[in-house]
Length: 242
Figure 1 (tube, rainbow, N blue to C red):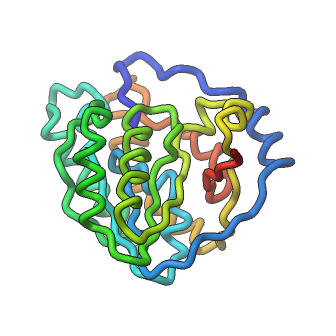
Figure 2 (figure 1 turned 60 degrees about the vertical axis):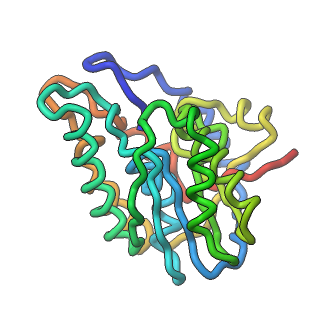
C-alpha cells in the first residue's frame, strides 16, 4: 500500500460526508462479465483484499492472484529491512488469499514504488498468464497511488492481447479522491452485490494483514488507517461513463 514516512501521519482524507452522500444517492448495482476464471491483480499485497475481497469471497469459479510488487517499501523498518518487510507481506498475502479461496501465483520482483517504470514488462507477464474467457480484476487506473495506476494500466494492456475481460476496483480512491474528481475523470463507482458470508470472509482476510493494520512499533501509525474500510461500504467497481 501507500508508502508513508514514519512516524508522520498520512495526508488527511477527503471529508467522509462527501462519500456518504454519494453512496446514499448515486451508488448503483452492477454485474460482472461471464468468465471461466478470475485473475486478480494487485500492485501490493493487500490491494486485492481491500479492493476486491468481497467479490473474491463470493465467487463460484476458480480464482488466482498476482501481486506485482512485494510491498517492501511500505514502511522504513530497520529491524526488518526491505527484504524482511517483503517476506512478511507476501506471507500475509498468501494467508489472506487462502481465506478468500484464491490461489496465489508466484510474485514477480518489480520494485515497490517504481512500478510505473515497468508497465510494459508487467503487462507482458500478465498476458502470458491469461486464458480465453478470463476475467481480470485490477486496481482502478486512476486510484491515487502511482503503483496502483501502473497496475491498472498494465492489466488493461494485457487483456488487449488475450480474449479476456477487465474489471477495475478502487482501493484508496474513496479515501483521497472526491466523488466529483471521480466523475470528472469520466468514471463512477458501482456496487457489486455480495452476501453476509462474503462480508465475513472479507473481514477475516483483512485481518491477515497485521503489518498494515497494526502499528509496527508503539507510537507509529498503521500503514492502512481503519477508517479506509468505512469508504468501502460495498464491493465497489469502477465503471467508465465516458
